[in-house]
Image (cartoon, rainbow over all chains, first blue to last red; front, side, top):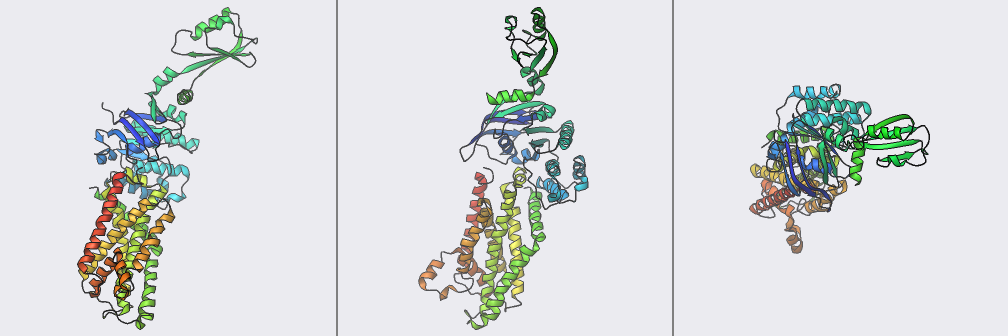
Length: 306
Length: 253
């Protein structure tokens, strides 16, 4: 199936001279959750803002379900809902009014049933007549999501949806996002929290210094780049690493009482079985062992640092 | 055209106006009425008639213009500046709305508010001074054109300003002096020739003169010239706003 969003050679240079995006090309598939990771100032928000029409591009093209987002902006934007990073809300309005306002702004006929269902899904129903100024930060975040969903978009952009949100609410929001994906909405999510991308995304893109440095299925990414670390608690401390182990990537710590071996789960050479058998042959006894899988965070930091 | 969006922006702006009816409607009306009381009833009776019109009646068009200009500018500039300031502008920019639709909603609402204020002042002035409107059609035309033009100007200021102070600078430093020196309270005939010539460079002169002509046919410049100048100013404002949207000035950069 054709991608729902197709970005080609997209660049943005701000008037200040800052080059926020450097020739990004990216296809977003229908129905997926794409997680965009990147440090502060990497260009994530600029990318989203250009797709949504909030910021003008310098070069390149964006099509949304086949509609160019500049020349056919009406068709393109009708498909998109945007949840901005900051809590930008008209604070003196009620929840119901502002969500209804958003729907009308998108030119959709009034549909109280849909607004009611959206507010209920986001646990906002009992707050529908409250003024936004009286709501907590987490509630305001939900109102932003309700506004973005008010016109029944097929694509939802969530720009750091769980920044500054407590753990319980984060779990709730994740459940909402999964529910939306199950109903066929394509979701693009930027986040600082790597566990969020790990938890939610089907595909992960990493943006750094305005470029897309990686885009991969999450599972493939974790497998491809995922390394495991085996740590052995030794019976007797070692002063140096024995010659027999020289072909393995090992390191000693805790004054020789711990031996760590880093290996790749998909690399058959130097696998864990061979390592353990060499240990036995070399008569190195160990009391305990445990393995750790490198998280997306390690992968991410590795990419961003290099 | 996304008329539903235009109407939505318009009505939400009007809602804000009526929510703060004290500041937005009552205070400009009261402050203008004070002018009638002081210049029309108190001092006005001692000032000689200008071209056969009592001073109180002479200043009515000027005062309506004064509040129409300042209200149009402040309503429109605040209307667009506040969403920029609070960040809620993102929603207008991301929605399937063209620049024209956005301008119609915001500027239309600002113009409607100042027209409402202008009409209320007109009606109240009738209680203080003898009022005569010889050309009601042209009076309404000048009101509409001026409200639209200065709401566009206010919209530009609201786009240009990057702080609340800047929002006030142009109305205070430029518009108020131009209005006071534009013949709100006097006929240009009383000025020395040099100042009279200088006054002709003041665009507000043409607005007030045309508007006053529609009341009692007293004018500093020919009404056709007034109309042409007003229309010209409207088109300049339209062109600048169109340019601002085209380049994404302060909105999308």
